[in-house]
Length: 391
Ligand code: CUA
Image (tube, rainbow, N blue to C red):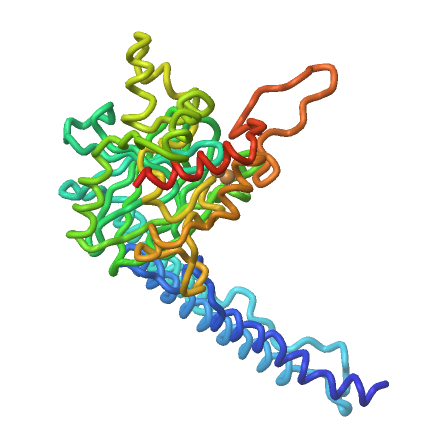
């Protein structure tokens, strides 16, 4: 038993190291240790510096402890095993030394931390600003395209994919439409809470075009675990083209399943979802403004098909043809991930929990998220055909 334990001892030492190395080597898109932009990099640099200091302190203290244990251990020929070594109490020089060294170290760490903190929270006055709104359970993004400082009718509102130009600072104004959420794209910056009634700034910057993922990091209700987000960074040219397209209204399909789907959308989905050019005109005819049209907590679907994901970014809208786990910009508009989209329309609460079941004596409870509309298979086909036209 004893020899077996001895043989296992080195294994117990090596295993954590193996785990650590494999964790570093694995595909971890949400690691903070691989920053993909200057702001996240400054956080990582701070971490590396503090970590080095901590490692130095650890080894210094451990070596000291080992030295003292060995030097003052009880020996077989000790005449008096209870005798204490000479005590250092009241040694002025030692006490000053071990007060000053940690104080200087902490002051340095504190200075570096505060500098980094102020730096990553600073607004870039020359940068583009996107308003980020946390909703149960998806992220909405508004672009002030006419530059009037407000987010109104003429502006672009999208969801799930935050599209930005790469290689430059982007200001985010983060807020919430219901409860506290938290926005975090680990590769691009630290996290920031989305608080109802407040607008908090955050800045992100991606070195290169690509997709950077994150997820809501503040418990916000039943589907908190299904509230993900993506930043899709593009070249300036691609971004300008993307934004120009987002400004356009959707086109009413003229025939076939898509036209039937548009009609269905206008009757079944209009209470919550807006597709500019499809259902807003209809409501205007009845004398209502857009505030009436949209519930205020469902994604704007005007350019649904230009996004890589749907339903709070938990399902791919388009097939991930290179199987790297991420739908990239060049895969958007490729082959539709029809299976998940149809399953979603068939019964949304089954794919993403919406509301806790109401107490029996309270009846239905309020509806949060997308309800099961009881659509027929034919209607689902029509809606899918229509949704694909929203590009
Ligand atoms: Cu939103 Cu957790």
